[in-house]
Image (cartoon, rainbow, N blue to C red; front, side):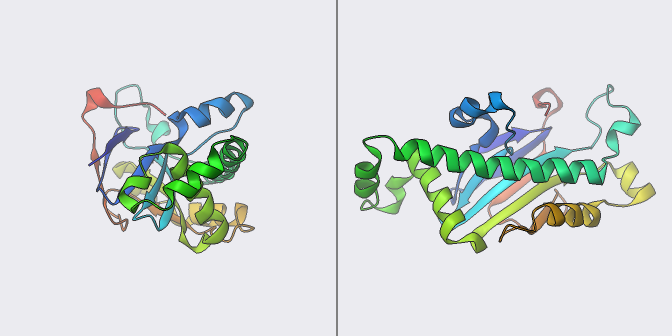
Length: 207
């Protein structure tokens, strides 16, 4: 089962998932120099649902984090998240445009589509083509997720910003047919096939 780490969290995905580090992928890196920002993970679950997942962890992870660093600004965070979603969709569209200009793409797609499903996902380009297909043909199967870990001390004093975040992002993305935001965390996770836990301190990544 694939395991990915982000922002001090470790995500383990069952074999039903094909998941990639969006902002580390070579296709994304070709475009990142022009100011485009992508989400952390992109995944396809059981070949039927596309997930764009951004991870934010405001739990205290080291002594350098001051108390004010643990308090997210719902308006700023919501806007940044919405911008990443829009940029990520643009990246996917650009990737497919690039692939379609390759001489081999149409032939390869025709051949691979005739193979059993378990073999198709071996090709990276096939993953991105399926992602774009879900966006264009099945927007109801596209899910936008913000994985948000909030500091316990902040939750106890001022409560969760989940509701505020959902409102901000829904307003920013209301022109999309799949604009509903889902805020998840370790305690509240309704995503099938994903387990999340705190990573060991020496494995923390900063983002």
